[in-house]
Length: 326
Ligand code: ADE
Ligand code: ZN
Image 1: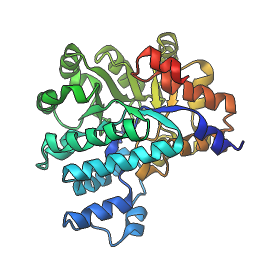
Image 2: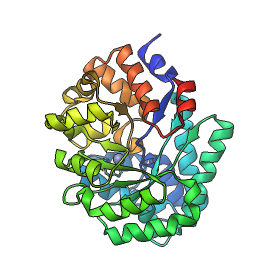
Image 3: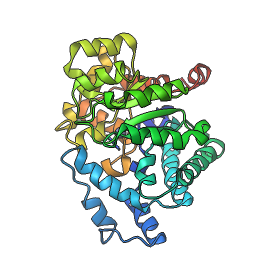
């Protein structure tokens, strides 16, 4: 069996995927036409050509602009469904995607429109594709904690449709502790919590996500590698890191895939997982992320299998279901 087939057949969970980041250029164009929106790109090739980033903010500027084509419940359904078909093709049996409500509510789209479109697609995937899912509502950290509180309130009528809250967007200058109170409230309401930390930000942000936000998982967390004490804690407590290799190289967190530390972390006993982050922008879905590790870091089949097992273990699935998949 070749490596692509081997990776595809491994049952995997994806734990770090922004639905807005799965908006492929072709669908962006189609939705722009459907909604009478003029894009600043002549064609699909021009959209793809614009995807050259030198850091996270460069990417976010283009990503938020792309999300403007999402207007109706049907648009959110189509976006989510297209992603789920990719999951099916790549052996992703369970997914815990993020959505960024503020990206949409701040431009006048109602929370109801987006949650209904997303949830309908997730439900259909369960019955038609055999893919289970838990949704994660992510707060934008460049906005205020007050705005995050308002978003959580707005979401409460739909509380059974998401399992966790998260924290994403521009990391530098927006440390986790800025959101300490809203995360405490979300936990008190019974939600799980995750946060992007240590993507561009320093190891101190990972400490703060753990100690101030009490998160269940760290999204990215690759800069924890710089701090031996933090690495030991991650190992001792088996705190999952949702790592996104292609994202990290496209956003210049690592200069080259051969510099990526994920397999070193894996071999040291950190609970690392492989994920795609924003696949439409970074050149690949979850299987392409595994393949990049094989091609640039000589990932072995045993390492690939362990990464897939980690993804199931680090998910929010009940233990019985985890055991039945692994
Ligand atoms: N939003 C979408 N992708 C992101 C990333 N990699 N980091 C922070 N915020 C994001
Ligand atoms: Zn992310």
